[in-house]
Length: 158
Image (cartoon, rainbow, N blue to C red):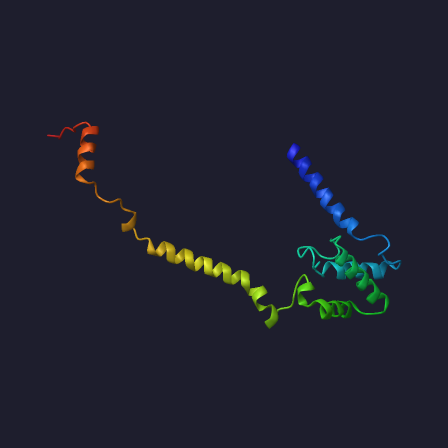
């Protein structure tokens, strides 16, 4: 029960961190534009944190990017134009879901290649271990004598 309370507290703290990332002075007065800005911000990566969107991050660069997004929306840009503007300045890495292109091929296929390589290594490792290699070597003469001294003689059945 105590553990569940701790998990709940940490969850609330994490949610509060994301809620406080956007300062009130950043928010747009138009609720529709603000909703669009929040949606776009969730699709852009914080270049400082790299594992958070700019909507969640409280890094100064994330703040600057949120301001740029809102300025572009106020200028009349579409969502796609805002993202294109940011990508033109920072590259496709700024996108939380980068497009599947030659430039990002390793990013998309890298995990599958690593998994396939690990599977192949495991396959060849276990294949090289034959059943014969698992059989212990025969006892030496000294070991046979010591074993005979430790075990009682067995009676042979008639």
